Length: 273
Image (cartoon, rainbow, N blue to C red; front, side):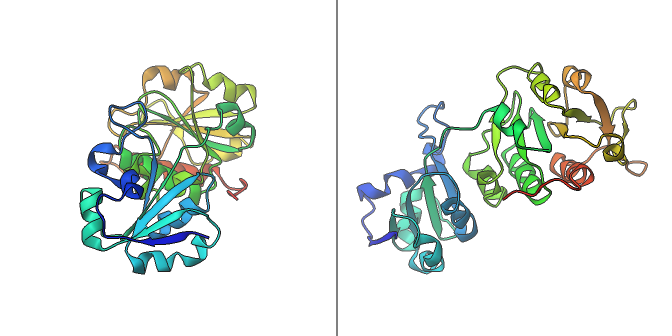
């Protein structure tokens, strides 16, 4: 069971993981980065506590920590209880959600491990916006996508903003990074996946009906909002598909387009546990 520790000492060493997040919240390979996974708010913190990520500590106002009593009963970590003012001073900004948790990063799965356990995959190229990435993971969790594979130019899914926007679902949906691109897509094909590139190009075919033509595993290839997929990635795919839209609208937010595509192809796919 989590140990509640009441403190108003801004210099308490137990709060070091939460200190100055506006500058210290970075990937391990970034200057000054500690690479911790940070969850905000009771919903996301609850999902972190239920995940495979090793939680180090919590920090929050008493009311929010009391709301997590059931989840905290199963973890043996310190939970620091303080005022909103002290919390803001430690974190470096005012936190409306009233509770934070930090965790270490476990060893990530490999591309092969994710491919072997999924029927529908999202494959991303150049998705560098943290909010788009978080929304993609939330949509993937909601619509039966078994994993997310990251190509070049993608942001860190475990960055605090992505975790928050995903509502913690980035902690549930497994993800891995390709070692080579776009050659790594051959791993998917070798395991029976059809790689479908989502693009508004004129030579693409309508997404609707793709599942009727491709009953087996599908990997949906998605690019950055704006530039979209590179020509190299599209040419490497097995098929180029598009979301049909009314005249005068030429594109959608990448997370919105992904949600439509996920819904179209994930019928019958096994949901996440």
